[in-house]
Length: 360
Image (cartoon, rainbow, N blue to C red; front, top):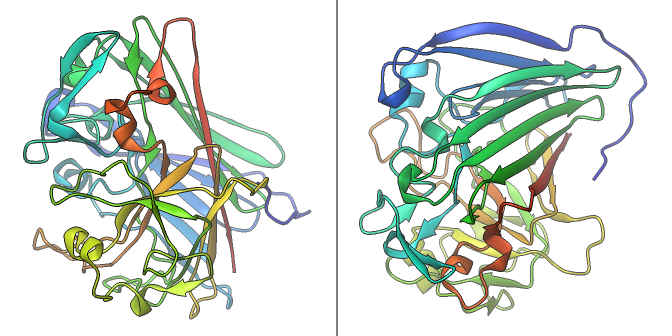
C-alpha cells in the first residue's frame, strides 16, 4: 500500500482557515474549520470538520497542471443541503439497511428511514451532518488530521454510545491514508466508509465515462428493485460487471442489463480478490490528464457507484460526473445469519484502513 518514494522536503504542511458557520440541524451556529494538508509534490487535501468532508484534492496532471479531482461545493451551506453525500464520512452504517430494521443479541432495533422505506448512510442525520473535533500532527514526511465524534446511544436508533475517530494522513509519496477507529459502551453495529466522488480530469461539469476502471473482483452483489442487495453473490464473468481489466465506463454502462437498469448505472458491492496480498481493490485512470488513483484497503470489498443521480437536484453537476469507490463491509450482513463482521462490542476496538495512492 505504498506509492513511489520522493526525497525533497517541505515545511509548510498544514494550513487552517475558518470555513463558515452552520445554519442547519442540531449543530446550527457552530463555526467550521477547514484544514489543508500539503505534501512536497504540491498535492493538497482540504477537509472540514462538518461531516469530516474532503472538500478538495488538488493534484497535478502529466503536464504539471493542478486541479481538483473530487466533486465539491464552494460554500458551507451547499454542504449542509447536499443530497449526494459529497466527500463525507458515512456512519454509523454505510449503504442501505432494509426497512431500517435489524436484530442484535435477540433484540430488535428500528432505525430512522431516509431512503423511502429504508435506512441509508446512517439515517436522517448521519455522521455526514455532524460536527467533528479536529487535531493535527506532522513529521518530516507526512501530515495528519484526526477528527473525533461521539454518537450517543439511540442516535438514529442505533444502540450504545459510539466514540469514533477518522485520521487523514497525506504523505510525500502522494498517498492519502484514511484510518478509522471506534469503541462503544454497548453492543452495536458499525460499517464506516468515505464517500468522495472522483473525477480525475479535474474539469468541472464533465463526466467520467472515459475513465478506465479496474476492480480486482470475481463476484459482485446484485440488487433488488428497491436497491437492497440480494445477498447472493454473482460472478462478474461474461457481464458488464467484469472490471478485471481496465475498462472505459462508456463501453459498458449502457449495456442492456437488468442490474444496470435497476441502478441507473453501477451502484453495487464488489468483493475483493482474495489472492491479492497488496490489498489493492481498484484502480482508476483518466487517459487525457494521465492522473490515476489506486484504492487499497483491509476491507473485504467496495461499493462502486458511478454517480448515476448526480444532477438530479437541478444543480451544477452532471450525471456520471464522478465515481465513488466506498471501501466497506457488504451492507446486507446486518440481516444475515452471521453479522459478526459488523458487530462491535464493549471489549473490542473497531479499526479499518483505506489508502488512496495518486499519480500520473
